[in-house]
Length: 377
Image 1 (tube, rainbow, N blue to C red):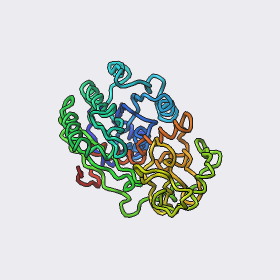
Image 2 (cartoon, rainbow, N blue to C red; image 1 turned 180 degrees about the vertical axis):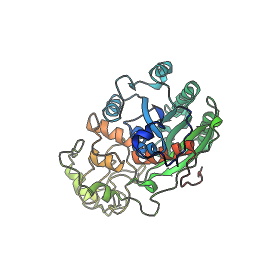
Image 3 (tube, helix red, strand yellow; image 1 turned 120 degrees about the horizontal axis):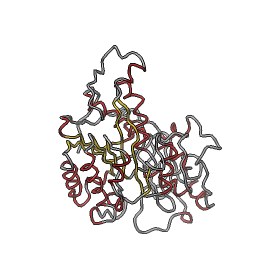
Image 4 (tube, rainbow, N blue to C red; image 1 turned 90 degrees about the vertical axis):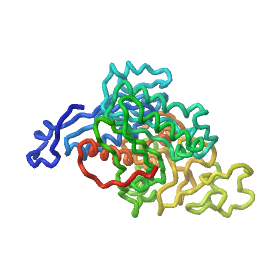
């Protein structure tokens, strides 16, 4: 990032040609990039931050899932076979990333399986818990001005809160040192038509003397409903990734008894259609959406009954519908099989949520005031 002094209130910047003289190009690198939720959020943020003299560009991105990387390359501006890399971070040569491009910003949504509220919650003892450490050498080598680290809300309580404390310590002292702002974002409060709660840690390099504040919610009192998201405008029948799942007649019969907002356990279902389950009764099993509220959390995996169900039609949602609830536009085309695409959508960061965060990061770096709240962690 060039060291440019910007007067964001300068009235002399009156047209695009004048503005180009002031643009500060921010190169963004990503680990665990997913299909491009964070990167698309950065692109969407450019619509606003370019007016302040800044622009975020893709530099490089890494994920270990081949279909996911193909989706990323297909949709993210500037992504190529060289810059979007399919690799396991445990075997990644970060010096190679340095040869591709230096970076000014770094984002990574390190895998959340071992910190999730669903499952065994192994934390640091699981296969995925330690993967956050692979971002630390990136901060050491590249010394980016800021970073964005994302994980599930269960991160706060994993290992009785010790995992979160360790992660915060390691990120604060990584590389040149960072001022950290952790916050639990409820994305339905930011215009995402889904109750999706994620811990996001923003780090600003200490020598910059800036402290990030979480942006104030924009939709706290008027959340966008899943009914609005899926119906306005209607999805074209021949839209990409809009294939219907063939439902078993027994599933169709069961759904007839489940009202919007109910699930397989709370609905009044005849005995012959009830699930024969005596162990954990997850609330999302055969749960139907309530069209008057945001959707419940879209997940990337799970067996029968976990696919998210329409409020009026006796069926699971299509991947295109799931993508809308994650705020991916219909023009964003996912690569792979139906289950592969489901995985990509469920693991992604909602682009509209990422957009708000990137706008606030750039405003923080440029000293531009914005509506904010105190961090809640």
